Image (tube, one colour):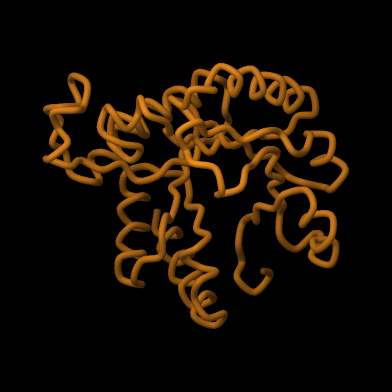
Length: 232
């Protein structure tokens, strides 16, 4: 982790408590405060709280993370759970990062979780609920689904960079970091890095696109990403 020069790593409480002590002071910790397994479907997506901001303070974390499933049927319960965590984060002076992920039947009926409409809406919700930073997926526009998109998204046939620029504007003063998503080629990954930064993103959160590569290749890609970020 130190060799990669990463600005932070995200762990759930069990992993942070068991494995991060030997790296204390080398890589900042973002403690994830809620989560779920991949076993249930996303039709009723909800991530229950699994750790507290107090746990984050005890473990020396620099920020906390929370997954918010915008549009999922349990959204009301999610908002209430999030509000309590936000209050606790403010009390401890802990930055709060939101993974804003559209989910559920209503989202699918309006074009899908990665549509510009869904991602734009999720970024705005994170901003209005008090997130300091929001993590989003790169929004897409699919012509064969355009009739499902609510107005005016049904006619906004923007390019990928323009989609990102719109979402970043919708996030307001909430900083935006871009998810790497499923593993892609080195060339595609670097294109995504540059496009995200050109669109105004604050940073990048890459998991599978780093950990699924051989270790030395991961370090090589990480160095290329850092070099690109220094240009902005």
